[in-house]
Image (cartoon, rainbow, N blue to C red; front, side, top):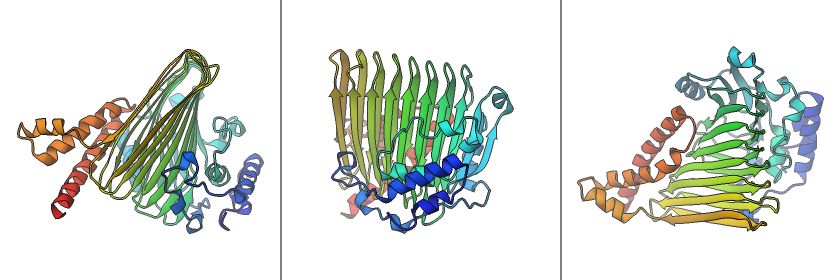
Length: 433
């Protein structure tokens, strides 16, 4: 580890004694942990060997205290909301929660300011998978949380924005969402930023108690020179339901590991993603559907496209434990290559330890369907427009399953703009060749 990521730096971030001790212990362990290697299966095909931690300095807690204009624009687009948090370069700069929800016991803000704070961090992400989990524990300046108590149905979305726009910074965002028994909420986590060279290592913990319902959408629009190495861990209780969706469009190298643990009988978890790679960026996804209780259901659908010299990576595992009788688990990843220079890897896996299950996985990587393109062109649609329409139709299946109509509409506009730009660039490249 480098001289900027030390136990002394971690403990200097302050906070209550329990948090300082947690930070110091995690930083001490991180000192002796090497960076992952592409030789490890879960990091295979990644670009982790390009990362030099010495080129970044952890956020110190200093902030302008104001909401950056880009984050303000996101808030302005979602006016009907229950509450919002804005974290700027690792520091919470804005928090709001409508009184109708705070009066009913909903909590939203810094973890250290909430009731039961000490039991929130690590309640779902109980162990670090690698050094990045330890670094998040050690250097997360302002961990934030949403807690919805038993029986409360929050009928407007909660928006959490993480914005990174400082060159050379390393940030470690932490969001915990806890949904009580028979409670319900919808959460948008928006990860944006400027065109800066930065590293961000977010961890999101989603805890859905018995009969709870959570619809969660992660929109990743990091700057083009930013690296993101993220983790999402969820625990779904008896008869509870989780929809965890992500739209991955930004970053230079942007990785998300999603662990969905179905721990109660009758639990269900849907994982959905849309991604679009351009230029030389890499979008990297690792998923784990873990069935640890009987009669559970998971359904994964990841669809994307890569153009230019971009790359996508998907590796997924459905695991059915011995106690997972009656499991229904499905996993589908499909990727379209928009140029001959683009590259995609898709590796689905099954690990079944019970015979009474229904499980399947599907994976495809290939160019645009020529029959569909020919059909459109034969009816007078220009080639570039035909290609864009085919890809939009391909992606719409996954996008239509995402929560939060306002946010997904904005995502759709962004995809359409990027796709139009990319199709034109690829066409120009083909003419040049």
